[in-house]
Structure formats: C-alpha cells, structure tokens
Amino acid sequence: MIDRRQLVKGLSAAFVASSGLTLLRSAHAAEFSYRIAHTTPATHPLHIRLTEAAERIKAETKGRFDLQVFPADQLGSQSDVLGQVRSGAVDFFMLSGVILSTFVPNSAISGLGFAFKDYDTVWKAMDGGLGAFIRGEIAKSKSIFAFEKIWDNGFRQITSSTRPVNTPADLQGTKIRVPPSAMWTSLFKALGASPTTINANELYSSLQTKIVDAQENPLAVVSTFKLYEVQKYCSMTNHMWDGFWLLSNRAAFDTLPKDIQAVLTKHLNEGALAQRADLVKLNTSLRDDLGKKGLQFVTPKPSEFQDKLRAAGFYKEWKEKFPAAGWAQLEAAVGAL
Image (cartoon, rainbow, N blue to C red):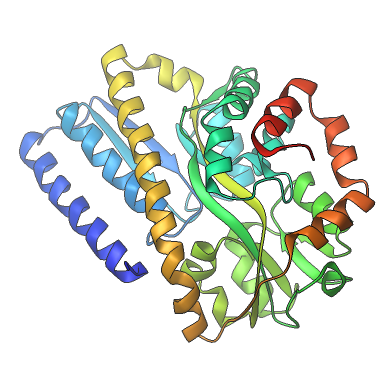
C-alpha cells in the first residue's frame, strides 16, 4: 500500500526528472508565460500533478510556453481569484464547481448532497452527460471555459472538535465551516447545523479559535491542512463528492497558437486522470495515518441523512432550481433522487 509520504516522494522525483529535461531543452525566456492558481497545499496530489504537467508542456513546446503554478491561495481567496480569471488577471484557475456556482449557478449540480454512492458513479456522470452539461453552462459566461477532465477533490467527510456525527441529530446546532456556496449552506441547514462561510485560507485558524467547531472536507485536505491538530472526530459521511474544474480565461487561451493549445489540453487532461488515481491511492492510507495522529473515526449510515434531506425538502428545492436537462443527466448516472 502506498502511503502519503511515499506517493509525494515518488511524484516529486518524477517532477525533478522532468524539470531537468526542460532545463536542457530550453534556456531562453518563454514566448508565453501564464499563471495558474489553486487552493490546495504544495504537498497535495493536485499540485504535484499540475506542476508535472506544466513541466511537460514546457518541454514539448521547447520552452515557448511557461505555466507558473501558485498553490495554497497564494494569489488570493477563491472568490477573489475567480474574479481575476474572469478579468484575465490570472490565466488559469482550479475551482470547485460548487464554489464556481457563485458565478455559474448550475455548476453546483455535481455537489448535491448524498447524490453519488461511489467513484464509478462519479466518473460516469462527470466524464459523461453531466460533465458536458456543466461545461456548457460555464462556457455561456463567455469569459471562461472548463477543460474536459475535472480533477478530483474526493468525497467529503465531517470533522468536529466537540462530538462524533453518527446521525443527523448530532449536527443539530453545530457551528460548521462551509465554503462560500449556497449549496453547502443549504445542505447543512437542512441537516440542522449552523453553517458559517469561511474561505479555505482561514480554515485552520477558525477551527483553532473556535469560531466554528466543525468542518467538512476530503481526507486529503484534512491531512495536508493538518486539521487533525484542531479536530477530534471524523465522520465518514461521504456526504458530497467534489471536484476541481480547470478553468481558463477564454481570451488568454484563444490568444495562444493552435499547436500550443493542443499541447496544453493534452497534458492538463492527462494530469487530471493521473491525479484521480493518486487520490484514490492516497485515501486508502489516510484513514490509518490520521487515526495514528489522534483523529477518531465513525461511519454513519448515509440513508439516515438522505431521509432527513428529503423530509426537509432539500432535493425538491434544488430540482426546481436546476434546469430539467441538467437534473436528467444527474439522475441518469445516480438514479432517482
């Protein structure tokens, strides 16, 4: 089994090797220098595979294209950078479809609570009709578009410093941090919690200072952000699957020669597939790793949470908000909600 340190070490070695090739092939300044921002730390598989893709792009274009990668919200909060990529101040951005919904409302449909039971269902939807529907909605904005392959952020779990969440009743009144999105706020209000919107770069401190008692994220984020230092319990709810769309400023991409566009598209989509596999391997070892760091795990029954959401009218509410075509693509993959 590959643990997180082995995975990062191996991927880092591949990155170093590809960097050496690039330096040999090109010693002159790039003809095109673009920036890409994302929210995950530099140790996360997303950053590692994205950096690796950037080096391969530089090598294949013989140094003509240089993609500079900025992890961990270095260029600003997710909300701020979304504005920057729309205006062209930042060229590329990795963003959750649910957070993107502040600008493209229908992109949130893939984040519907307890919709996906496993990864097979996720990729059936996101590499199929539902993904195509969402990319079409993003393209309507005219200022940005999404690459074909969405990157994985994983199934999300609930952590807490106060008590384990075994049933929806355990969430009653819990102050839980959620990202800036109506979908997340709606989900946890329907489950009886008190959600508070906080950006990712303030997550650790908000838990440490007890502004909120709980949060929800994939295990890879719990690990890389070291949330186990300020949280005691982890409930494996799998309550939401989340992915990162690789967004591009439309004008910035269209400015590039066709051959460079093709190289970019190839390596960034390949990077997405590699990162998906990395995250699956990582998650197989993270539960044991986090347990050794003191996090206590429980495994609730998803059906109890689904029943609570149905009773609260959550699915009915969101079905009415999303276009019928998008809802049909979702249910074609996951079944009737």
